Image 1 (tube, rainbow, N blue to C red):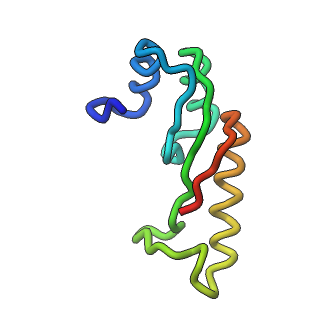
Image 2 (cartoon, helix red, strand yellow):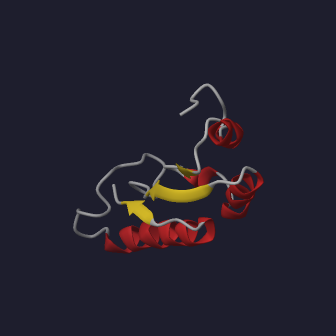
Length: 95
């Protein structure tokens, strides 16, 4: 929601609109501690994030299904788990 706003500026309108919890599908452009601060400042809980599809610059999908990319997929999952834990998330959508 609120695509006209930059991600850091979406938390306050979400809280004002009555949301108690949010999804932030791809929070990885910001340190988890910063995102946690945005949540706390606005009294929001965190529910869900997506995994990255790739760690490469070209975002070639398939790390989770293409043989030979298992190590990359583990890194992607570790990153998602780290963020989810730091944000108090409950769900991870694997892409």
